[in-house]
Image (cartoon, rainbow, N blue to C red; front, side, top):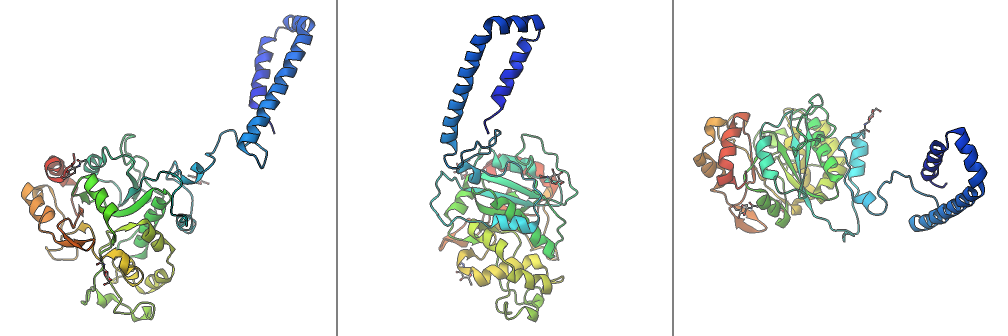
Amino acid sequence: MLPRVFHAEDGKDLAQRIQPRGYLFSIVKYFGPFLLLAAGFFIFGARFFDTRILKLQSPKSGFLPCITVEPSGINRWIKPPSSLLHNMSDHELFWLASFAPEVKNYPFKRLPKVAFMFLTRGPLPLSPLWEKFFKGNEGLYSIFIHSLPGYKASYPKDSVFYKRQIPSQVAEWGRMSMCDAEKRLLANALLDLSNEWFVLLSESCIPLYNFSIIYKYFQRSHFSFMGVFDDKGPHGRGRYNPNMAPLITIDQWRKGSQWFEVDRNLAIYILQDTKYYAKFKEFCKPPCYVDEHYFPTMLHIEKSDLIANSSLTFVDWSRGGAHPATFGKDDITEEFMKKKLLSGWDCMYNGQHSSLCVLFARKFAPSSLQPLLQLAPALLGYG
Ligand SMILES: *[C@@H]1O[C@H](CO)[C@@H](O)[C@H](O)[C@H]1NC(C)=O
Ligand SMILES: *[C@@H]1O[C@H](CO)[C@@H](O)[C@H](O)[C@H]1NC(C)=O
Ligand SMILES: *[C@@H]1O[C@H](CO)[C@@H](O)[C@H](O)[C@H]1NC(C)=O
């Protein structure tokens, strides 16, 4: 088929010009032969031109692609989806997201990005702080938000959080629906081929350093960061169910904080697992809190050489109780930030001692926003 657009418009133009009947008559009478000749040239020319375009565009199939063009060539495959909304089921989404190239040499310039994945109930009260953190680093990150399905976000167009909500479902703490939500975040983020590192965060998390420090930390690390430890007490091994053997023995059972950072390779690994998933779904129900055990245990068994066995997100359990401490307005002082969060650390980074061990911290109440905004430029290096 030839494109019709040009001919049709030309016809419409002509029809408008020759509307008065007398005018039409005189044109046909005096200029008829000349018009015929011109039309002949035009059609021949258009066909000739079209054929050349056809040859250039699709040498084999010989028909023109749609006029509103989809990107052809490699762009069709490497461009991230223009909208985060879709109607895929988890099954469809996880399958699609698990595609990985076997040719490791990218045929385009790939600037690896960090995917910041926010697992929230609804709003992000600390978003003004995050906006400052992201500012000036466009192209090096992307943001994904999973919130309760009923929540309608209303970020202004110039916000980094504008339209970054992914299709979400109810996620309950300690249940498999929480791990499903984490996998949903990973899968949506994987659809952007440039995302290389995936960080899970909550609405009460803050970044403790500027973007470039955090970016380089991921970029240079030989390992992903998943908290993994062997808690021999009732809240650790005490939650193990012997029915999980022989796939998982009690010696292999691990616990860890939910707040991880994994690279692309491990993100895909997490998505493709069905073996461990089935066991945890059946045998780890409250008081076995599956989001504290599933990923840590699985990665410990299968991928222990790829993970630093610690999380990069600081949580304060020192006050005791079932929930970690929440910091509010009155807690946020320069001294608190320096002593509690920014100094006194010692960990291994690529096999060497480092004092840079936590990059994020929680839990910060909404009331902490103003003091944090004030302290951030001097203490945290952004804002
Ligand atoms: C999802 O499906 C609904 C109903 O079929 C449709 O109205 C909506 O536009 C679809 N959304 C997307 C993002 O495709
Ligand atoms: C980030 O912080 C480090 C250390 O404080 C500083 O050297 C660097 O210039 C900062 N980067 C930016 C882009 O502000
Ligand atoms: C994490 O723990 C595993 C198993 O104990 C170990 O093999 C691995 O080397 C540890 N990772 C790092 C980075 O030390």
